[in-house]
Length: 428
Image (cartoon, rainbow, N blue to C red; front, side, top):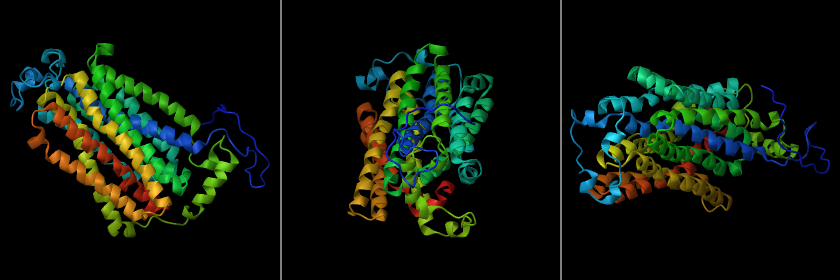
């Protein structure tokens, strides 16, 4: 795809004998920073579309009809508890949707995304090599956005169609992480990498926070039918983002039409020792038998277990157990991820600082932030039943602390693949 747009004027400098032919020495824009910004927004889209159904489902299901055939909530209704739990909530009838899906079917619908998501992350790395990480990340996100537009139609057609669409969305999103890791490996110098990774991946937290908050607001209105507007808004915005991604990014610095020679040469010199030769093969045996790799896998599993418990179940828990109103549900469900955005970004900067000043080794830095991200959230969730009970404020406080501290993992295991094997990071 070729574009004739030149978005910025070039800031020309003195001649440089090492400059790239046909390029200015400098550009007014550092395009690795553009990559970080668009990567942030891309992952925000990815996660927004991943979680919007979790909030919208509260408005889609006829809870009054469903609760007639299921066990009642353990917590009293809002009128019987503190005002914080949503005493200003609208009646249950105004929140009820058209679908009489029992809790088991709701769980299948919520989990169906991940049935597809487990399929493509591993081949996604190889696909990044074959098709280019730029287009794999962009098209994977764009494909998911188009499918988001079909969710309302699929839901009315039957739960089987909705499940199928969510499985396909999972397949589309599964390639996005290996693709963005490949982009980081090609574009970001080593000493800037933890900061870049943390900022890009903070987009995921941002997407969850905004996705839940906006989904709650939209589902509580009559705009475009209420809950269907959740999927239309996210689908349309993702299509807009894809146009920006297609124009302003490239697979490598050398391929970028507007990057200055100075930026390209700086990145290429920094990454020169990491580039694999064409003959180098992926060492599958070494990977499969590596204890450090196994450790990273376990870190992924533990942290994402915590994350997806909150992502998938928190809106339903707040709505059906603590009786939060749908518009407030989205806002409160988003709070743990607002904290995670801050923690993820700060921890990345802190990790780079500790390494640059040689206060801690790379291994010690990763272990520090990994330990925080696993231990503290686990304790918070363990004490929810005994300490939180039916108190909305205490429950929210525990969930927010858990989600915030979990964000420090962005300076932990998320940056380890690029540290361990930058030449193969896109295949992680």
